[in-house]
Length: 266
Image (cartoon, rainbow, N blue to C red):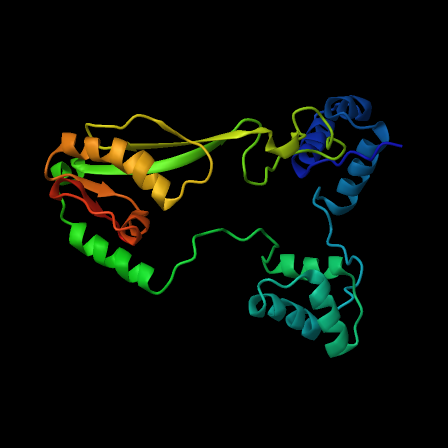
């Protein structure tokens, strides 16, 4: 048997208005797409209560007390990485109350706590924020012309069949294997390509295809020398190369001329 269609409060009010205008119950049911008996019960309820709103329902009694709810809710802020199953065990030890993990999650949801994948960011040492703050102070009053002399660079990887992150799709129940909602996988990733390029306000380097692991030695020999330095010379003696990999170059004794300063906030 298909599930009973729920009539919204708005449609209930429309049904009562049509009935009061003289429409038959069958005609009202046809307009709303519900059975005749649904309209009959709705009309009877309105005549008894003079309202189409649902009355409050007691529902099933909660399996946890207010004290136990406070214990459950207090665990997540203290241990952000904990699981519902661990909290369930802690509750059983502390209060001798045995509930399901679903109950644990429901208590969390009631106060707005939901399990989510953590955001990802680079690991920062104490020196990183200080270096970035100093960089901001030193460049806060730079003019547009000064920024136009900066050569920025970056590399990107492009996968042939899928992206690196975990994909999500919106779907209804029973649509799990529908075409368009399934992420196909290819053996060994299906292949990808890594490219590098640098650009300034008026100049850009050729797009460079990176094959294999890009070490500091390769970066110096294959990118900086043949691509970066010519671009900096085109910009002029005031050129600045903004890149976070300069430390690897310094470790290998790489030196630069005044027209190719390598700077980075760290």
